[in-house]
Length: 175
Image (cartoon, rainbow, N blue to C red):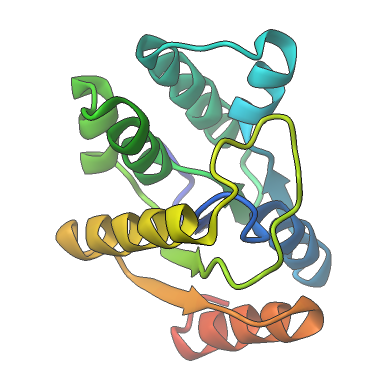
């Protein structure tokens, strides 16, 4: 994956209904930077049905969107780890393409969001129970640790969540 030399890439990851998109928007406004929306949402809004092979296509498009943008700071709503966790959770395995994209990842930091927000219904969401969302959170945490990826766990409601994320990025000297 290609990024400009001085580009900072921050991936926002976590289970469904953990506030990823909201935090991405807030961070992009606060940091005056670019937010790369989740391609899977756009794709699934058009098709609704998918099989495991579709995950490779969706990840490819997500990464294409990131690579086309040369802004100094990118806030990325999703990444290869997100696709690995989802593929493993839903289908029980992960494609070689997804695994290779993880190994080639160039994110400077991950913000892993706890599922501590109230669940919001959405026709694209598949895991409404807190138990399922906590299982997904644990899978994210395990994968980030397994690949030794720098990350911070983010929690709290509304402005607190944004402030925790900003403080974490400042402490890690990302921003």
